[in-house]
Image 1 (tube, helix red, strand yellow):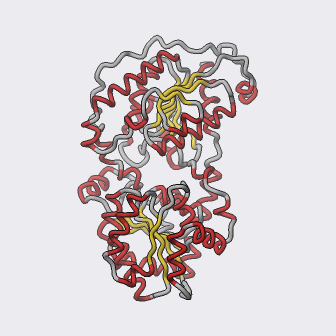
Image 2: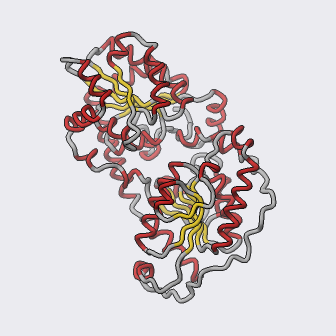
Length: 462
């Protein structure tokens, strides 16, 4: 077993390395003498009674998200906070979803959506300017609380300024210090009063270093459509086929074929992932069809651009492969890939959040991942966890097969998919996925809004 980080950690290695040298913070307008809304009359009454009363001054919360996924997470957090109090003033950075919850976004979120070493360096002047504009807006609005949504390289730098000025600071989504560069905990402690973690295994490092952190759970635990869990498989397939013209035409074309298994193929959401993984998957599909010509494969993509790339690879394959593989996307359904997985028997996929989705849906899977050799070499030396797939990290053992780097070749993919479809292996993985999902839900029952308000009120009394 290779010692690898979860895909989100490895994939963002270049972005993290960008700031590994702790790029100098050029002098910005200092964030000092920030006034606080007076909450001195808060008593030790029950938390929910306190937040339900509207006799206090409004809470002013600064919040910053740097990309689309953060915008969705931030909007969900804001919704829960707004349910506790209807007088919160929101200022910071976010996209359409956060703005719909009442955020006054002081700059365009796209200015912070920069990834990769070259891109970050090229945009450094504007990133520093954006930071200064955000700090100025926070000072002008006299924020009481700052919440950074993910984007730790940017938000922790804001947090250091704000916490030293007496602002209560929260980081929503922990940096991956449980996996690599644990020494970053010292910066996190300087920049935050509380960390909201998505997974239970992240808490131990904060307990070790005596820093407040709670597990609020991944947003997928709350946002996935209940129908995907309760609707019978045949009905899910019918809905998928009839709602999607491409899939409808595909299965009409398949005619009277008595399908043995429907396999979802998900080679990743980035061009680099597709280029590295999908050709190997297609070669494995060719081998699988030689042994079982009743298999069908369905490939969902997140947008039309990636669909075009996937189709180009597919067009270069044999007639048999093209006949048994269909590709489609539906940008009108945010959960399109989840619906494809729910209707499938097995998922062949790249590592990442999709492995968590498959686990929650109770779908046995085979994980395939391949990185640049230098990135993989570096990751092996920096990363402390032995697994890539989130189900394995959560379970603390390998419950889903992982094929990485040289092991991610067509022969191995074909062999492991075959093994995974055998009834005994299939049922064992299904059992392990369900047990791990149940445990994850049990450990992720803290409401993030309650956690922030409760800890903030406690902090104010100190």
